[in-house]
Length: 461
Image (cartoon, rainbow, N blue to C red):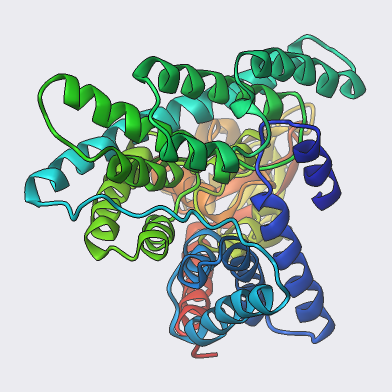
């Protein structure tokens, strides 16, 4: 992945290097943790610390790196994780400095400290960035889908993307690679509103095409660049209406807000701006815009860019919070297989002969093809007024509602809630009956696993 990202960025594809940094740091930490045989919770912290340290070292921002680990990788601020993650972030920046490395510092000074009225304007900028972030994430997915529908061979897709990006670069070279140099250039020079809008549109297209055509990289730095452009355009448009807003400040706030909309991590981006400008007022403005952007994206879209791409590939996660234990608890692992079965065409007399009262509480009914035909509660079979020649099919319940073995525990609980029943059959895709699962067992298992997760969260295990 790191080699692919380096090649993609080196040839000018409009992707960022931060994916390689984070994955290399996290992978190194994971390899070390597995070698030391760490527990799952400790390994998760170590991986978060590795990824956060890589980001902190790359940008020369230890606090931003630490909160990247908390918000993007670990998914929560755990007391047991504060010390190792903070130590990793500080150490990475120190090592980069001692090694003579040049971080991707965004060395821009704020123009003025914002007042209360400007906080409202920046919050509105956060709303604008939320909309832009959702549009960009959906367009990346549509681009990937469109490229797949062309049935173009995988080896030719990057060539197609390269041709498109090269054509855009003829208009402005700012669309190439991550755009770090272009960000500084646009902040340092006076450019027209039309030029800023053109660069924003072309950079967006270049990033969408690059990712859709299979180039490897992330949208972290692209979102910073696009956010700075969006902030400048926003301030210039307000200026046309007679509303004064410092362009540099708007660029920095927009940079953080759009990055939050796409990548996530409001505190991560707020600390990145704070460590860049050392202006607490502007850092607070960025946090206000970031929180608005994060809330709108979560409510209206539900995913960050990374989790959205996982969702498109069949994963069910919606955030960085660890849901591995939920996905690991499949219905197929929890079901009972020692359940009696009877043909649905059999009679009550045949059932009573095979299953005396008290031997079992329910029986699975099978159709002529040995497929699922419903559940029969033994209490109803031995009830008053039930004739011995009554077909079992007449007393069957839950004929249409079943569970599949690949459902996770949350999905199973939703099915139980909708069916309002205590037990359901587990049926394979081909209709074969695999077993039975009780709602009470599912609830107890969920509560037990949730308690374990909470203990891990607070470092009590």
